Image (tube, helix red, strand yellow):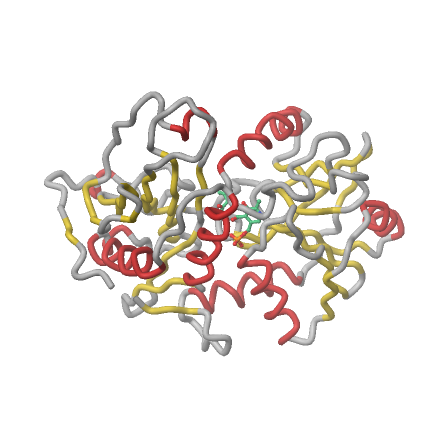
Length: 351
Ligand code: PLP
Ligand code: COI
């Protein structure tokens, strides 16, 4: 158990400098952050402190060996001003699953949850209420301990920073289905939210952006024949009336939005198949007209419809349907998140 969390408040709030009606994703940061150090073999008491640069030893192992993991969550405010989180315990558990894989000491769940609740209390005014906006929450842990020896550090920092945010994608999303590079491999770290997984995606994604796409859809490293996930979201494909997504594995992030969408869709009697999905099947469906939708699902991306995809030099357009599963499911999930409707699943947590 931890007692009351120490709070050191800023004397210079930046909140009046922020245009809440015009928020980008993750580019302005709230006044405070949660900070917690691992030293002398244990996690010390977390504190809420003013958001500010941190000082690190140049030999800190994060810089050399990339020992870092993170999470992505959102806080919402409902019409009565209640502060809400969506399945937060799943993020705490996943952070620790990621940490374990990177040989980072796991954070006690109550340090995370009590710390986050205190941080949200202190920065409550930073939670946007505009439609489509929320307070993006970024918990992360990294090796702050110094040394050039390639082995786990003996000191770590756990920080939760927050950013009032709008949509992750600013326009349409076209994706390139990858045929050369891989994001992850069997036995690797693909299932962990490890910082290095994202660094490794940047170069192939830059190449895709130069060709006019916004994201890469990764395929399995072994054959490049199966759809896995996108850079920042899991992928769903609708063929006729069936919604299909690949199974999670040690190469794919077990997305909280993904598993919520599966449950939601099934509860709405949408036929969902969780099974390996061949690129060839999607291409064939695009050609014969049975491919109705593709969308990405993730905390930052929410549900982002995909307007077209490229594969092996060919481009395929998705039809522009009036009523899509994507818009229906997006409304259902965001209504639950923001307390506009009942939450029969018990996903929402008021803090
Ligand atoms: N896949 C990757 C690689 C991601 O970075 C994310 C975002 O967190 C997701 C999937 C979606 O996961 P979640 O729905 O838990 O945010
Ligand atoms: C999230 O959706 O929260 C993520 O962490 C994805 C990130 C790359 C923005």
